[in-house]
Image 1: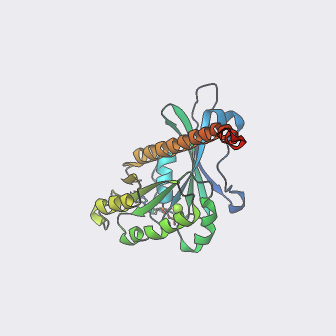
Image 2: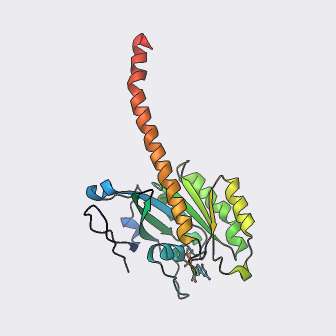
Image 3: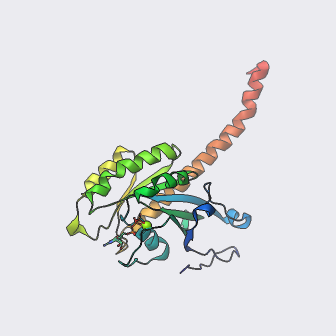
Length: 235
Ligand SMILES: Nc1nc2c(ncn2[C@@H]2O[C@H](COP(=O)(O)OP(=O)(O)OP(=O)(O)O)[C@@H](O)[C@H]2O)c(=O)[nH]1
Ligand SMILES: [Mg+2]
């Protein structure tokens, strides 16, 4: 059930939790918030990708609803969107977590949803070497469809099942490092281990990158008249 949370500055609440979306109603651009909310919360679209059954929906449910989904599960049909509010360095952020289906028959549909994504989280299952080997397929999609400087995180899921482990933590860490990805964590949606920590660190990176880009744009705008004066023979 969606959680209601009190906010300061007289701004009542943002409902959190999951919304199942019809593919026709899914915006492919950056998430929009109302003007009033926009002043208070910056919104980011984050995509969750990875092979089927690695635990993407279960991780999103743990993060946004703080519960573990039971064994009686279903493959995600189309897309689910989870919403979560975060506070980073005193600023309120609204995060839309797009949980995509991992089944291969949906591969061509999901590609359009990379547009407008500020961050991408790729999940593999530490008890499945195959899901780890398939990271290269997902990295390929990211390279093809996402913006070049998109923030990324890699998660090794189900770390409570250590006795079934097929992928060592160092292998995951090395893989992430090879791609220059700083945020790598092993998590368990069952126990909640590392879930909050991983996403908090990732959202901080996403937010900082966005702020740096904004500053850069301001500098470029300020530079503009100087360049023009150069054209008049003074520069
Ligand atoms: N023990 C354990 N089981 C988990 C964990 N996370 C997910 N699972 C189980 O793994 C199964 C698959 O989880 P899902 O979240 O449905 O996987 P998915 O990646 O969303 O799969 P698709 O929607 O088909 O792409 C479920 O039975 C979950 O209960 C975990 O941290 N520990
Ligand atoms: Mg799912």
